[in-house]
Structure formats: C-alpha cells, structure tokens
Image (cartoon, rainbow, N blue to C red; front, top):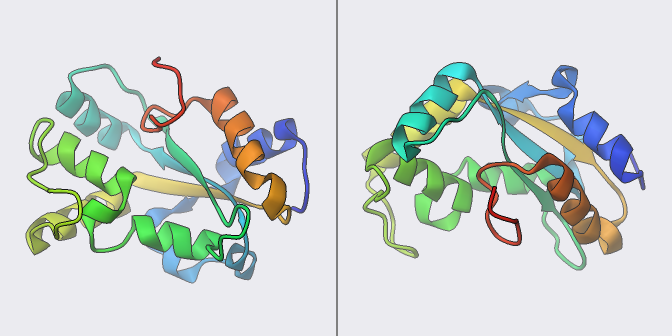
Length: 168
C-alpha cells in the first residue's frame, strides 16, 4: 500500500472484506513480510466474554491495533502478529490483557517476564482463534509509521490500546 493518507489507511483497516480469521494467520500473504499497521477485531461472542471480564459494555468490533517495523525496527507484520499469537502471555500486552480479563477477573496470575502456565497459553490461543480476526495494512514508510499509527489510533480508539491513548 506504500505511503498512504490517514483516511485511506483507516478505510482499509476497517473494511470487513480485508479481515482474516486469527486461525488462518499462518497462511498470511507475502506482503505481510514488511512494515505496516494491523488491527484485531472481536466477534459478538468474544465481546460478551470480555465484557463479563471487565464489567463494562463491549460490542463486537475493533479490539486492538498496532504497528510493525517503525523506524529501525526489523519487525514485520508477520512477526509482530505471530508475537501476539505466541506462547508467552507475559510478552504481549494484548495476550496479557486477554488473560487478565478472561481468566482471572483482572488478575491473570501472570507475572511480567515470567512464563504463564501452558494450559493458560493454550486457552488464550484457542480463544483468539475462535473470536478474533485481523486486518493488515502494509506500508513502506518505516520513518513515518509511528506517526501514522498515532493518527490512526486517535481515529479508531481501540478499547484494548491503553498506552498514549485518552481514557474513553
């Protein structure tokens, strides 16, 4: 997609036709081998699970968004998404938040930097595969990617993005 304007990126990321089920990530397209922005989307059942865990209303839709490969980072969309789908709850903010909300009413029992029980990791993987989809927007401009992420996050306001976001 190269260097695009904020509105084009938001439109691309929010287009339901661009989404891929989390369970199908392993067969990701070749253009995911570079930098860009990504969004995680939750279905209605998953949103209900999360709403019960946080005690707040949450609807199906956008859950979390991020970037891969900004600046001098060698991270790619594929590697960053795999990071969130990995086996270590403590290494991914998204996974840690899901574990906390879904499994322990705010306390996942996971200490940052310490491995989570294997059963918890498997449960998070299964839940993500059952209830999450991804949209991915490959972008070439590594130097402006962080700024693009900030602009897009301000427009989309994903509920699980906390750092640098206003409380909504």
